[in-house]
Length: 231
Image 1 (cartoon, rainbow, N blue to C red):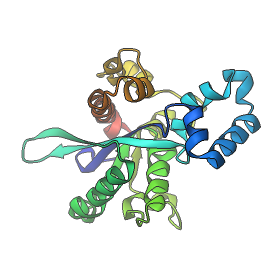
Image 2: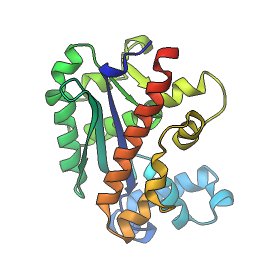
Image 3: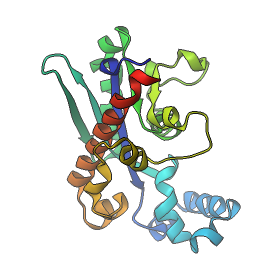
């Protein structure tokens, strides 16, 4: 049973490092060749159609080709007796990663010493690996709460809503599907059928992306609140 008041929820939003595959080729020729190789090896062509579309749709999923643009962090406040969220966004990825690193290593250190854990939806499969790779990229030591190497599974103080909901089954439900089934607020409506890629590279609307990231954190918290005492 997880104590939801001792969990620090977070969510990460990513997009492509460049607006399209042509910009990737112009700015990073080796990276371009490697992405095309990955694209061909994974047989995305038959599923997606062309490498440019594959870059836009798939690059945000891979730390080697994506760009972290927003991280939202939320936790229960004993002072206000409410769940509070703060988002951190920046067009400069390195600046953002250094800020996030400092928060988890320094600002929240007393919480982790008091037994707090981290939480989110699919953070074991996406957010933690992506942020860990970014920490390493910029020469930062991986925060203790994020460590996965030489750590026994039961030593990780992590609540992953995706993992808890999956219940060792084969069904891969999205956060949206989990929220709808549990009848809690669904953050996906914030995007209004637009993608993070469109909002960032076409509309330059990092504020709405930040709002959406906050929404993901809050929706995950509401879903976790419903099931934490039941598992």
